[in-house]
Length: 120
Image (cartoon, rainbow, N blue to C red; front, side, top):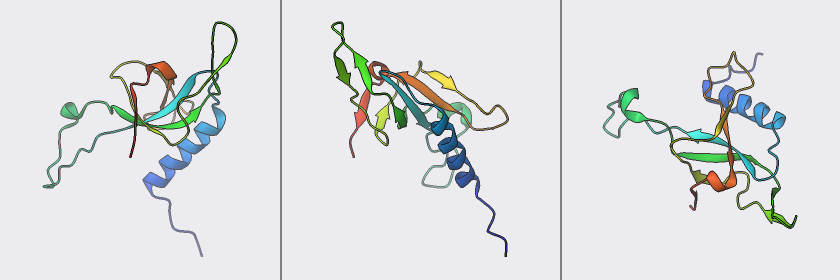
């Protein structure tokens, strides 16, 4: 018996996991995956891509140990893996290791560029 074929979401999740295993942020940097806004309304209508825009929320995939003060003391990282965060419209470094992938990629931000942590 063959295992069932992987769904597109499962394949994307596996690609993201392999990407985060290869990238370890240094100091106060955070690896974030943007959460794209919903393109379908509750009524079933689809919103055009031109009106959706970039995602302004994201999920922390990996975080560095924290920054250093002027005296060399460690400033602890305020974010942890799995945190939901509010992102700026611009900024962050796009990280895309697999060029054959259609996936958006993930972004590397400094901790002070993150606007807020979203509490559930």
